[in-house]
Length: 207
Image (cartoon, rainbow, N blue to C red):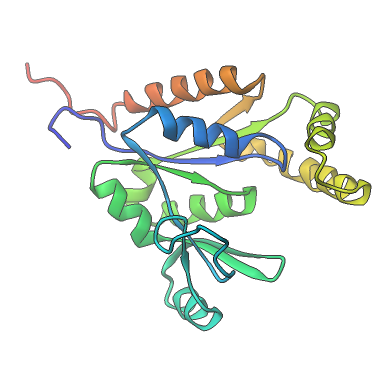
């Protein structure tokens, strides 16, 4: 990182299921070589083609628990019997290398990251949180049905959870109302550009 390069960002993106955060994050990573994703740890088995240290860090349950007890995780959660988490060392290592780090997590994970950042000046200086959501529950329902992957009961459950998640938007730095992939990408680029110019992240000119 050169003297006049803004300090790197830790960008947390959350959204309700079907809100489009994975697509948005993939698009951002494709167009920003200065940005990298945080590789998540998991206790689930690797799927075909997945590589340890690239797609995930694959831990057995005992190793994962030891990491939790040692306070190694920035955030972690158990989903459908499998544990997932983001190592502090993974995020801080990439920030210190001058890379913007993109973290795609749910609202509970985002809350944990915010709390952790309150006690860590390096994380606090870097953190930017964005909540992405469709403009209405009706549009989210349309998206979930369009995917065609979930039975009716699962769709209703996802919508119920989504209403609880959307209520947390006020805890984020930015609320991005989804208008489509292209528009969402433009909005995220604008957010990143603005955050890069914050006085806390830019080396002042010499006069």
